[in-house]
Amino acid sequence: MSTHVEAEVKYKISAEEYAQLTKLLVSLGFVNQGVVMQEDYHIAHNTSPFGGMDFQRIRKTTPLSGVSEYSWDKKSNSVDAHGNKVRLEDSRPSSEEEYNQLLSGAPTDSPRVMKRRHNFVGTIGTWSATISVDAVDFGAGDSYFVEAEIITDLEHGVEAKELCKQWLAENLDIDITTEAPGYLKQFFASRPMAG
Image 1: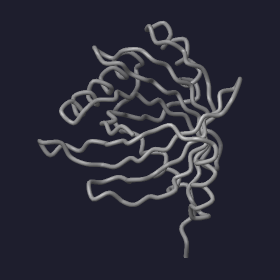
Image 2: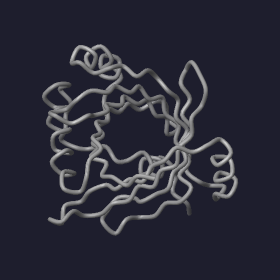
Image 3: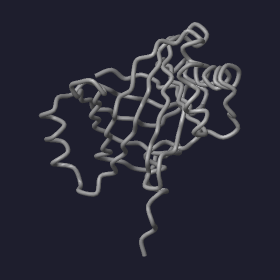
Image 4: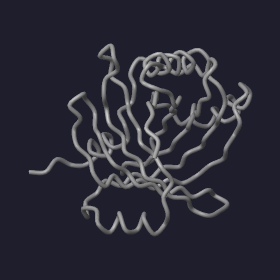
């Protein structure tokens, strides 16, 4: 298992932007990693004392052409030495057996998020980065998002996140006024209120 800071930003985009980003990212030197289907089960989750949500997730990733891969992640919010909010991530490969075992032991109402993800790898500034272009259906048809992520450490988390924002605005003309909530939070927002 490896704990690191996930410097990530996510923005909602239009269907037109979604359709154009593949060519644009490749023209900017990003390498097209292809399209995968991802099925995420959030097997444990709670509101973070630092804002947002902390969770454990199991993921099944299936490329359009092949064999599924499995992973386990734990994401939590924290603060750096200056009191700035950062996102910590523990992540490791898993197996189909462990995936099924964890899923069978999880609450039956564990949030499930399905997405079609198109990944691109390259650099933002001097950092290795992944840009993901997602289509996610929360029950009312596809919504589209672009996500930029740099894996770093506590010392550079805030700097890397700001760099991702600037890069998306300057190179992809993304409106960075308001970040999109995480997919788990959007999952809950899309469900009718009980009562």
